[in-house]
Amino acid sequence: SERDSDKDCLLFEFSSEPLLPCYHVQVSLTQFCNWFLLTDVLKRLKMSSRIFRARYPHFEVVNLSRTELWRQVSVSQVSSALASPYRCKNKEEDNEEEEEGLVDLVRCVPELQRLLGSCIHILQEDEEEEELLANTGKPCSR
Image (tube, rainbow, N blue to C red):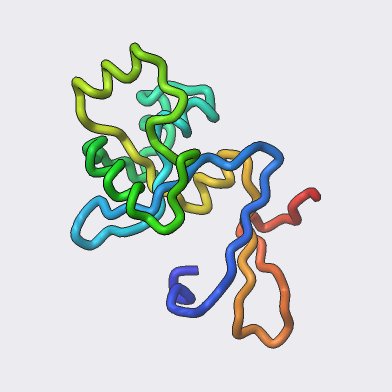
């Protein structure tokens, strides 16, 4: 929860599908957090950007220049060649995005992760008994 944000905890994400790449980037002076590429989210949910934005207006979507996204990802200590935002693009999409110069990012929050098929568990360090707190409110199938 928000009030516990300054406490140490471990977050575990479980999914029957491969997890989408997540990028830890700064999109403004005050916002340095985890983001998904909106195109990855739309592909996983099999919906258009217009429908996604209409159905989920509470999910924060921002745009960042491709150059700035790649710069931040390339200096990140957790980046890898596999996590490149340029992977698996066809030439048509590349030309379109190069002309535009911007990519849409959607903020990675537990509600979106659950929508994408993940089960999120948080292990609080300071709890007397080590127990998993499920953000889903129900046990995750194993």
